[in-house]
Image (cartoon, rainbow, N blue to C red; front, side, top):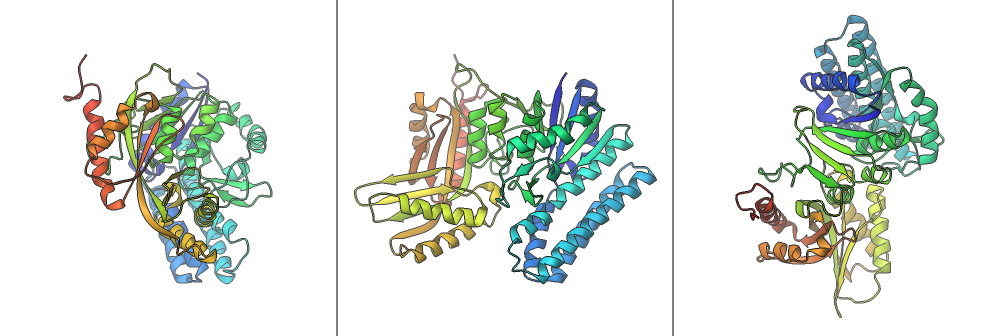
Length: 478
């Protein structure tokens, strides 16, 4: 049938029952597709633990990072013990796990000895990329035990990036060359590459990472380079939902989304996808399926280019953290925009891709998104960095910084259906809206709210969305 890239998230590889599901899926799809490539994430929680180990190493807290390494070793070896592996395969895998973790321990120790290392960010990326390397070896061993030619491949040998450690961008021309040289020949030999997500390396070989959730991005990069026919993302939910099911219990699966819609969803807070993964797929018109690894027979969500006449109206609502700045000022926003970008890059290695602003004759308001890929501490760290930058430029008295929540309503052709904005504002009649913006793709309508009002607003908008879906008891009938 062609070439399929499948990405398995941390929930898919973190326990023996989940790995059994992974194996069944791979065995089935191996019979249906000419070429199969897998991309895997670290086990759930492992990247956070590795990041903590790196920070403890910076503080020369040797007991702290050694404890984390010991815990990770026990967790991975315990998982291996639960898998149906032969003695030879099990012993080789255990030796691999020990080697990777001991090498990482050496890296932590070198960081503790020299916490002022000018290459500190490269060292941290080396540490936090170990989780994917461990997971890839476990999955590849399980495939080999079941008569499939699984081979673990470190993406540091494939994906060439810039030097933005922590949030690197692939250099596609060089990446294509590496993949053509090292990966494509494996496919002709019926090998199933099990590729580490999240990580890459500079042209000189320094390890980098692609941002939190970057394994999704890896899958789309690989898919473009091997000219895949489809990409399947296996997660712990039935597809992309109308909102985060952890926030709203009656969230529902969306069967079909356009590339533009899902790109807005990913950027504005839907944690199921990395914000940058959609661009390469959209450019090359590669369909993406999001499916549940524990319920593989469920249809899931299909993301592809849609016709102008496809389903319109609001499909989903997201929420994401941001920072807002206010000032009794009216005039150019160039200086404050530069400071915002500087502070965000300092703390997250991300640039301010989207900024919402509003001005009157005597007042200015600016806000921006803190990417979910930056981690849970990013809001506080960015606020501190921004306030320090304002103080350095003697602007602290003028501009005040505070956390905000940005709620975004997603749907097709919202610019042609102005009643949608009216309906959204109507259900929020008792909520103070700090700012409102409609995206140029016409797929997103964003509202900036105070954090204490955001959860209630999210639920009110979601109730409106669900009531209008086909099949809803409250949906209008023809």
